[in-house]
Image 1 (cartoon, rainbow, N blue to C red):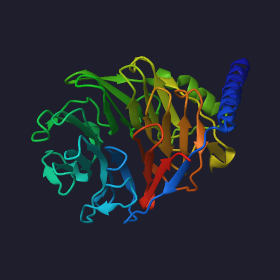
Image 2 (tube, helix red, strand yellow):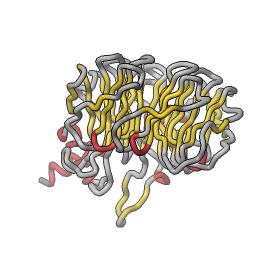
Image 3 (cartoon, rainbow, N blue to C red):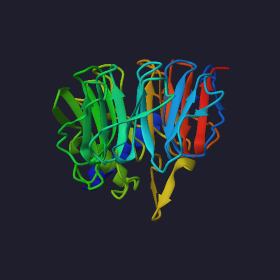
Length: 361
């Protein structure tokens, strides 16, 4: 037993040492020069999601029924809604006229005039809806609390409740085409694995969802974490966002610095080890844990990607996730969503009306 524990410790140290070297290599790359500019927000509400059509036109949603729009790259954000005690969680825009927003109490909103007005659509549920994704003007999906999965094929005139075979909190949905998509979420009851609470669902046909990423994918990770007192089962290992580059290559991120990557369309998921400075760690009952909640991930190509999360964390990769480095934008606020229109220009939003735009010097 002692030999087993010693071997696991050596593996743990080796992973962290190698990852530290990889991170340092990128940090020393002086050609990687960029700037993030803070933009003025007309409200101080927590912001949940950001979506841009092009370099000028974009929207943001958030708490208290916040809907913001810009037509000049975020130099000015205009409030398009009346403040109400309802949180809006996700927005998806198809073109300059048509888009959808989802939120608390089964809220689904649609615009067909570029956000000048938003119309309520009937979801027939009261669960909180967390994420919306459309592949064209007619076909889209919405996911949310209680294992809720809704689908429409007529632009939201009718929303059909699909069977997810799960009651967990579903946080993010992403589709490659009409037939292939993924959903990630959380299980606060700890029904999956050993209290890990992470679920990935994949669809290959209209109503057939398969559970991916079982307990075995966490086994080595949890052994190593517990040996070094980095992991406590009281902290949810839920997943908050999913993004796919194509049918095979995809990522999901979540609580406790969780990052997984697949090269096989989700048939196999590998834990992506990322190392941080010690000042990002927190203590709990005299033990060190990973405090970072990763809330969103996006890629503009197979090489270039970004992750955002709590404590003002932004991570960037330029080699498909082999190496990641941290970007300091001088905030410790929770960052909730990130959106890039190309390799150079993007936005991130977070709590207290925080909006940053990224550009190149």
